[in-house]
Image 1 (cartoon, rainbow, N blue to C red):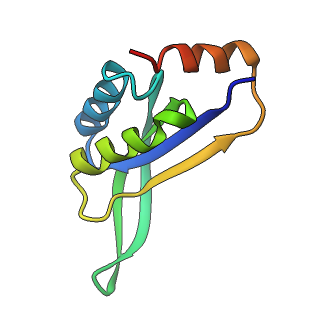
Image 2: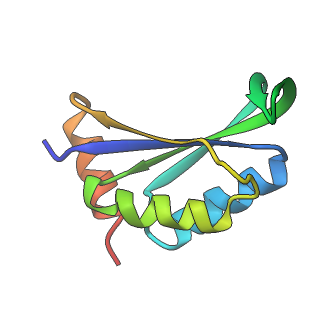
Length: 106
């Protein structure tokens, strides 16, 4: 089975989430991207506790595309310190994994 990686981030506006998702898929850096509903995040920022509403984005990609995807997210992300997490999927449907690999090629 081809490996799959999932790259996750959050942003402060649905429109930004949609733009990041569309750019990654159009650029073949991800086979698909899913924008999740609003989540309330509580975190430390500048010596205080903050709470804000964010939208999550999950990108499904091939491991050899992760670095390029992360770099694009860093360059396009509106946050000073963006949350960008990478997870390797050890097991999954082989057909889906092959589809992800195929659709992250030019």
